[in-house]
Amino acid sequence: MNRTNAPGSPAVTNAPATFQVKSFGCQMNVYDGERMAEMLGERGMTAAAEGTDADLVILNTCHIREKAVDRVYSDIGRMTREDGSRPMIAVAGCVAQAEGSEISRRAKTVDIVVGPQAYHRLPDLIAKAGRGEEAIDTDMPADSKFDTLPARTRQTRPTAFLTIMEGCDKFCTYCVVPYTRGAEISRSWSAILDEAKALVDGGVKEITLLGQNVNAWTGQDDRGQMQGMDGLVRELAKIDALKRIRYTTSHPNDMSDGLIAAHGEVAKLMPFLHLPVQSGNDRILKAMNRSHSVESYLRIIDRVRTARPDIAISSDFIVGFPGESDAEFEDTLRIVEQVRYAQCYSFKYSPRPGTPAAGMDGQIAPELMDERLARLQAVINREQVAFNNTTVGSRTDILLERKGRYPGQLIGKTPWLQSVHLTAPDHAIGDMIEVDILSAGPNSLAGEPSRRKAA
Ligand code: 5AD
Ligand code: SF4
Image (cartoon, rainbow, N blue to C red):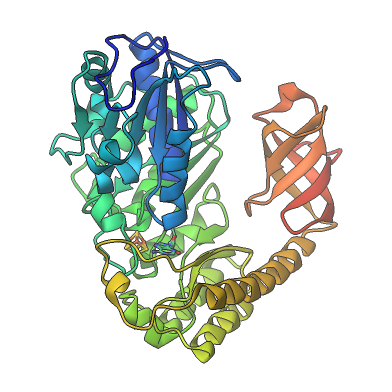
């Protein structure tokens, strides 16, 4: 199907047969993108083959930093083909939620705008757009999208994401998430367990539980007892064919005693914790409304390490928050060295419309941000290389997840989330095997299957 309508004219009446979902940003968008694809598949549409034009392109967008938003508009612009035709274009995700109808005003070729809580209504929106009607839905409906999405079926990978809670009530002063994803809402115990079982029945060996503040999850179990995420993890661990459990992203204030204990007690819970601290300076943490201090954060890390001594820790950092002095920035370098992170994500502060920090005094010049980011990344890189080097010569279990770049090469993950490249046949994807780690680089390891078979 080709749309040749001039920009701004009504959309062509047409029903798309093929689709492509392009997800940007966080893992929750990846999850949402998969659920959209499954839903459209159930409605008889098919995913466009690699390298072919789709009738419908869904851009599943991220609003967390300005760059991510600019990318959406440039992607939309590039979708009109040389002959003037274009696919039906849907903007989903957090940009859709934040900008709403502004998107179709700014980019006239956008047919559908759908927020992250409303994408279960995508089939209706596609029909509307096909009739040339306005198709915008940024509701945060009381009925959960999860109730109407189709059940999970056979999966193409041995690993899967599973959203267990959405939204955020923390209101860090720099962050748009509480506005785009709404208030914290936990999915029910039974919905999560049913989805996990369906994923495992579909071939999944590892599940990563997702939420903006995943460790704030609460709910009643099937006996009516209140549970936290640790209870959920213990229950999931009873699913025999599920081999590994991970979760992300966590907030320091929601690291409960039970969850810390679970790290020492539940073998299937992988020894990896993504616990963002954002800054190593208390005044900045306060201005960010993080509601934890450097010291309370470090205490949590200590307790987690006591429960599970080999746990790998990762974090997110923001440099150049309004008013950040050189000395305050250097505190961030110090915490990276002190914690000895296994890996980290670091970002330049990006003022987001409608957030308190965007109106704060002392916005930092871009050149200074660039310089701080480069200095921080150098320290992070050094720590990451040091962490990876500790594994050289060791023997560990990996889950073979996908093909590598070269023929005959597969990529698996260690319990500590490191990628291991090795030679193995394609049919081994999905296997847990024991490997010897031969060498380490900053971003991955090289290994070979050990002769002994993994337990
Ligand atoms: N500018 C830069 N980084 C941000 N993050 C969130 N909001 C912003 C912003 N306005 C980062 C935080 C968060 C990660 C997902 O994105 O580090 O943990
Ligand atoms: Fe954003 Fe803070 Fe909520 Fe994380 S905890 S999603 S950084 S507001």
